[in-house]
Structures are given as structure tokens and as C-alpha cells.
Length: 514
Image (cartoon, rainbow, N blue to C red; front, side):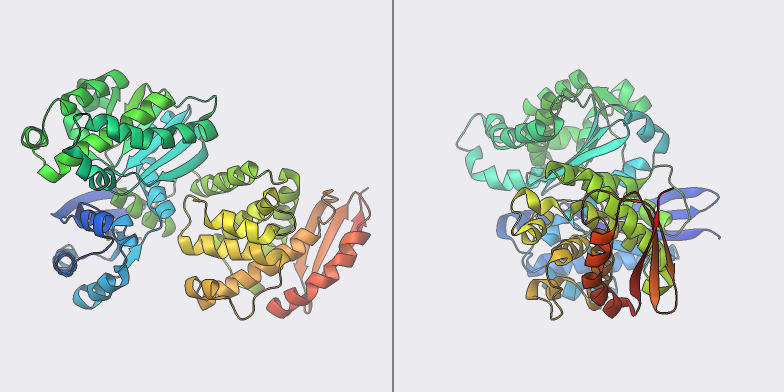
């Protein structure tokens, strides 16, 4: 494979940015150029919930100019993404309906969990520094215009990730009427954010400390600190050094900050809310060292592209991070670890044993595991209505690395494990999930129903399972430590739906443990 040229485009709250990369298996990913145009769409979205006609026209103009630059660089492929700026605009589809005809660019609306996952991948691209810093308690804090995201690591493991609707631009727009009414604007902002941070700390941090903090999202803070010697050498500063810069900003007007840092006035006005959010997180988490990796969302998008196209191979297991995130959600709702583990084992054996029949790939295999990990979480609220409760829990919970559509898919699979499958599709299901996703939901539901019934007693009777596809049967040969009469009897009621989906009937054959 030769050198591939790739363009990543980020339509953000403050600007539209394109980065050009060259990538190959021999040299990895090399950043070539950045083109950025200022466009404050976030101000319109967070105040009026809508993008104006003039702003939509300007967006099209900018993107059209990007396509010309892409031709000059002979770009082989691209990905254009929009975040909360467009995601939360009521007229988002009207805006995007203009973009493609005028520019030829397809724009993906990232879910919050996807956006943060790419931000996370952007710093993982700095593999040596990233692997070293997350060995101890570490928090990744990303503050954008609309939202703030926190991800906690402990001993190289992602503990949890949480989104807060308190980005710098959103807070600025929300509190704008109060600025002229108080001399203590800092205190007002802190009151707004502190309770949310404290609640997160009590729920997720508990006795842990996040001694290291990775800060993403606001390049103006890096500019403010770039004269610091440690910042120049390792892109790290101490909490004390950060607080000195923090006090410097609070003692100056936005106009003074704009001139001294060489940034726009609007950007300067957003610094105070962002810095207060960072400061509150640092104080509550006990952070001592701050690392500014100097990466951007586009770096994560390019890294993800190179990884998926097998141009690079990451040392960090991102798929495991998604699974750990799902396991922590299951733990929060007291799901049975032993039962879900047994069902995952059975389901993966079935999935792998019939690959030529179901035609699904690694991504569906991952979604299968996540659905099983979360399939019992509804029992925490109601045993009699567990399926619907599980659906609501999943749809209300961020799972890092999954799109909204994938989360909807998992929620419906979990709902249909015990409830009758909705052949006609309810309105919510049809609106979000396409025909291919509908069939994926049916296939994964059928597999989990069979895998689940094999541990219906919750006793984990099966020691080993081997699955072989024959002409009309899917033979599941198990080595069991106890009698399987219950499971064999209940399998029949799940076999009809399985056969309807795959045209092959599951059959259980048991061997006693020696």
C-alpha cells in the first residue's frame, strides 16, 4: 500500500477546520496542512436553537473552498463531521440539505460519545506519552463550545465517561444577561457548574484521585501557557502554574486578553467560563499535573480512518475501552456478572460458528457483547417491566465510541430479548434504524435469545461450548457440569424465531463433564 492523502473536516462551535494528512503503513500518519475559517455557529445554536440562512450560506462557501484545496492536494478520501453546533440545531437537516448540492460533501453528525471517542483517539495517537500517563489515576477533560466531557482512567482502564451540558459558549450565552448585574461573574459561573462536578465525583471518583489531567478543546489556554518552560518541553504544567495563568486572565478585560494573546474578542470572552470549569474539576479531582497534548478532533478522525483501513495498528485496545464502559454501566445497575459472562461466552461461540450464514462483522460482534452486558440492567428498576426499563436506561446513558444509531440498536435488541419482536417496527424504531439495522437487530436478538436460554438457570452449567453449522441445523455441543433438562426444554420456544431469521435450527447436544 502506497501513500494515501486524507482530509478531515470539523464543523465546530467557533470555526470550520480542515486538516490534510498523508498516511502509509511505513511512515504512519503525517500532518501536512491546516485550513481554518472562523464561523460562530455555536452562538446561534445555543441561544436560538437554529442556524440562520446567512450562516448556512457562509458554511457552504467555506466547505466549497475546502473542496478546491482538497483537489490541489489530490486527496484520496475525506471525512467531514459536525458536533453539537449542528446536532442541537432544530434546522440541522435543512442546513445539511444545502451543503451536499452546493459542495458535494457528505457531513456526518457525530453523537456526543463518538465525538469524545475521536478526541480520546487523538491523544492516543501520541502512544508513548498516553500509555505512560494513564497508568495512574487520570482524567481527560474536554471543554467545547456546547459541552464538557470527562473520562476517568485508572491503571490503564477506562472507568467511566460522562457528558455535561456546560460548554464555554453555552454558559456564556446563558449567563450573558447577568454579567452587567454582578461584580462576581466568576462566582456565578462556579455556582452553575460546581454542583454537577461534585455529583460526578461522588458517584464515580469516590476514593480515587485523578492526579493527572489531560486537557483538550481550548487552544487559547495553551497559548496562554506556552511561555512556560515545562510547557515547551513536555506540554505539561503544574496546578500552581495553571492557577497563576488563571488569575492573570481574571484580572484582565476580554479586550486586553484579545490583544495580548492575539485571539478574537469572542474567544477571549469564552475563556473565563472554560477556565472556571477546568479549575473546579482540578480542585475536586485533586489534579497536580496537567498535560496539553496539542491535538484536535481531526487528529482523532484521521487516526480512526487509518486504523479502520489497516494503515496503522494501535497499541491501545479501544474496543476494550467500549466494553469496559458497558461493564461499568452494568455494574452500576447491579447486573449479574457471572450470568452475563456466561451468556457472552455462549453468544460469541454461536456468532463465530455461523459467520458464513449471518454475514456480520467485527462491529456487530462488539454490539452483541454490549447488548448482553446491559440486557439485565432493567431489573434494577422493575422485574415486571425490565425490558422497557433497560431500553430507557440505555437510551439515557452515554456509551463512549458508539453512535446514537448504534445505541438505539442495542436498546431495541435488549428490549426484544424477552418481549415479542416487533415485526412492524414501532415509530421510534423505524425512524432511527434503517432496513439493514433492522435486520441486524433481528439477527443479534435471535442469537442472544438462544445464548441466554442456555444459562436460564443462572448456574453457569456449561463448561465448554462448540458450535458447528450443518445443512439444516446449528449444532451446539456443550460440556456441562449439571443436568441441562431445563435449558433443553426452554430452547424450543426460542428456536422458531432463530430458524425464521437464519433458516437453520439450533440443536443442543450435551456431554457430561469427565
